[in-house]
Image (cartoon, rainbow, N blue to C red; front, top):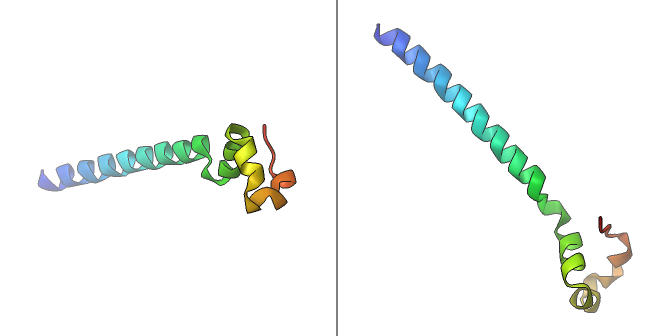
Length: 63
């Protein structure tokens, strides 16, 4: 009986772990931290152009 409960708990923990991994992946996809320069350029265009990053400014896409 105890072994069946252990197996059920392991399966539940795996499912919950996969659900959390999926939620984390969705949050990272939604926030997209690799697109931060475009967010800063869209929100603060004057300050962004004064920074040394202005050399790469033409290459940053704003959607």
